[in-house]
Length: 618
Figure (cartoon, one colour):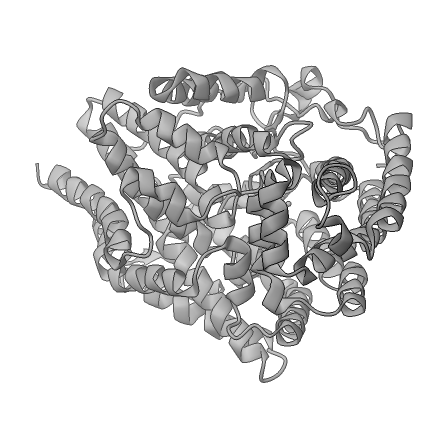
């Protein structure tokens, strides 16, 4: 996911997408074909799978609960390997059901029918999960030596060794079974409920510009328009509407921060971000080193670049709404969808035909939802669904160069998800820190392919500037977001925060990270409200910086690599969640625990700024 989730309204087929296009110049924009999962919300196949899942979940609990220690002593029938196989099949089925409900909802979050469908399915899946909750808890109560012997003896159990070893890392933070069940069931009326409130509130917001009432994505896109007055009007509209809805966003933020604090306290996590680090299978020291390296680089990266940009735009300081303004050299023509498709696939093909072939299926088999439309989830994401099905990609395509890069980013995720699917439902999921590898690498391939074709000095400058801005947004901005979250969650421990207090924390990290060349004026104190990662995945944001710096280092290896890099890269993606980042990076000679690792990644951004400065002098 990018830094960036009807009475009977079914998702139209891609052939019906003409009306959804926001501008005829973009061409036909595809709408995803969710019928690959189920024909409709009320389809017999969906109803049958819900009934099947319930029957299998209850039967699984009756068959295995209280018997796993005994199963660990067996090989073959009745052993742990058999239990894991049944559990994985159930996980795949439940994931397919939940994905269909989620993708239907995110297609139009403003639809009450979609909201009810999504909520009802989530509630049902939570109920079914309560029958399966015992499994991981009981597995973790088996002595490690007994489980190791079981996996050595039984190939069926040994197949799941990475998953079992990974599961053990949760042992110190496990609660007793009834408490775990209570946490699971109450999540529907706590975190999940406030996540849905955020999504539906954000989908319904409208921002008034010149008498027109626009959705979030369209208004944010106006901040990239060449006319300063258009950007100023969009910023004013955003600030006004965010300000009018501060109470609800403040309540959501306070509630979710407190909910997380309660969970962390009961489980015994020391640091407010430790649960995220555990989920990411990354050490706190590694993340701390990344955050500190980026913070130390603020003056060399964002401060320096924005000072240059202010000069290019003839300003002493940039207004906060000018941060992503295009340079005068930037081409203004909209990029048709077919051109965006060919640009990305050509770049992927230049790296490896297999990569382009996988990405091409997303276009050919209607796995992409591209148009901007009322109620559709903002931003962009690639959803893996389950290995027995296929991923889907959501973008809000408006024909900007950044939209092409977003497409390259999300298709990178999609390629990764397809390749990792071979690991099966339990082991295909990649920790967030590594999940950004293929997406950022896909962006880099696309950027480099375009840059190599560019001979015009002015166009090259515009391309380099846009790439630097995207990297600053991915690295500097996301680390600043991480620092903001740390401040909010730390302060929330002392009591409920007012909107003004949250705004002050927001401005403190923004001023530090953006630097003196950005004028932060009234209205910007509310812009924390629309960042979905703060709501859906606390402390997710550092994964973007982790991924960008990692890919910068990885790309440098690729540029100097002997034949065989592509194969190593595909092996990294195919590994899914079966290997730790240290093991995955070792074939490339990279080590994220080395303090100099992050400096190498940041130096690539600095070198692009150097090139821009040289172009400016030439």
